[in-house]
Amino acid sequence: MESYGGVIDWKNNCRYLGVYFVGGRVFNCFSDYAKSRYFRSFNARLSKVGRFTSDEVVISLIYAKCFPVLL
Image (cartoon, rainbow, N blue to C red; front, side):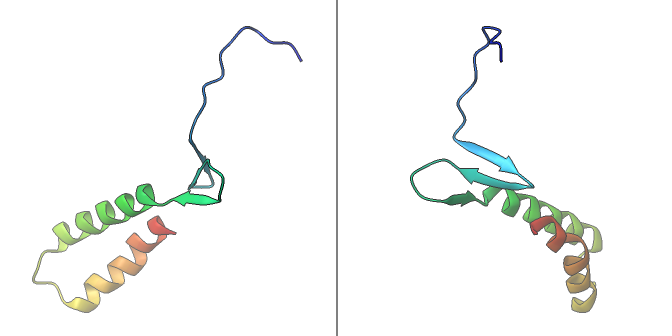
């Protein structure tokens, strides 16, 4: 394998299948990115339906649209 004189950047975390792994002596996952995407999706849905929608509709929207973002 030839080297072309390029520099390989060192990273402290790695993304694999949507999960961020953090480098270190112990196994660690970084979940802040997933949580921020979940709350962004939740707030977007809640702003569209408003306060006067029934709780059942809001909960079904959360299960249908927000939880897949988290998982």
